[in-house]
Image (tube, rainbow, N blue to C red; front, side, top):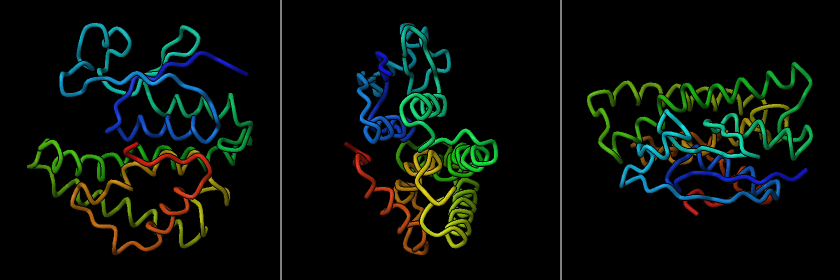
Amino acid sequence: MTAQMKLYMTTMSGNSFKVRVLASILGVEVEEIHINWDDREHKSPAFLERNPRGQVPVMEIENRTFWDSTAHLVYLARAYSGEDWLPVDPLDMAEVMQWMSFAQDEVQFGLMWARGVTVYNRRPEAMQGYLDDSRTALEVLTWQLKKTGDWLALGRPTLAEISCYPYVKRAPEGDVPLEPWPEVRAWLARCEAITGWLPLDD
């Protein structure tokens, strides 16, 4: 299966990274269109025609537009990897999807937003809440990895890894050190050893 795909993205976006790294692992060619974040291109009328939310990434596939990295991951996994990264069995799919939801909950509202304070000075008054959620995220990841071993779901790499990785990796940029979390650090290293994995800031 082949499809002409364009990814509107920035290199600093962890959500853009999710799409780029899965495409790399799967050997899928995606045209990367870099959005100028500093010039607020993502808020321009032309960009808002593609995504009224004014966020990256945005993917165009065969003249259809999809806004969210979760939608992009599901498409790539289902179109190009069979069941390797997202199974069709209902129970197995649910096991993977709960970690994709976790990435949009504790990981995002903790680790991502803590980084938003330190890097972009966004809502510094809320930092303690972000740090509390960050600790919860790392506790839950540690709890799961102690139970399951190498991977978050199904005993193998899945979209669970792709979804959770970027903002966990960048946790120290949000004043959340990873030294107290050896299971999480080992999991990050296992992700980075997957064939086709990209450096986060590549």
